[in-house]
Image 1 (cartoon, rainbow, N blue to C red):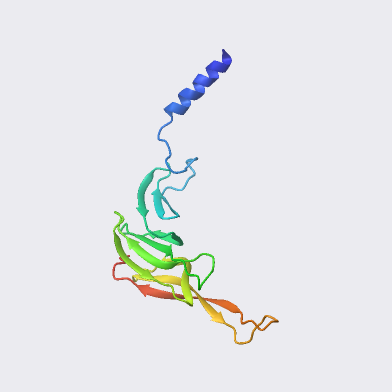
Image 2: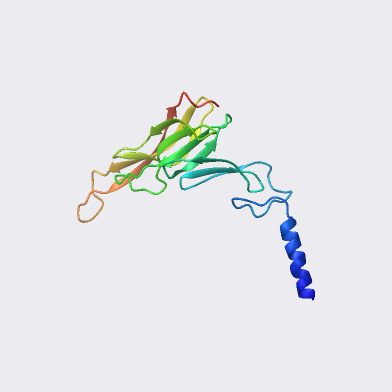
Length: 168
């Protein structure tokens, strides 16, 4: 009898809990920061509230390039991955996109070549420029390997790209 009582009590509590999470929030206490969480998985980017409910979702034809921002006007600035066999590094990017709140592609730009690609992070600047981290392949003139094979090293630098569509 006691076992059945606890089962029904558990079932009653589980069914009466307000709001079911939809994406993965499992704990929302009073000490949680008030705001939203933005994250990207594969080709989809989600904005969720503290209850785990999806506020907005953007979908792309490209995998994530490891960096994403919701801008003050509600547009999404997203780095995207373009496979580049000439630049085989982790955190590959290669493409930037700006999408409206309704997922309309407003602007895109490719940062990839046989010697360089964007990677890991981008950052929107207040003047409308976008700071882009670039990895560039350099060949050493003096081989470091004993067999005389030229070695590659990677140089990291940043550039800025102006977008007339970026309103900050």
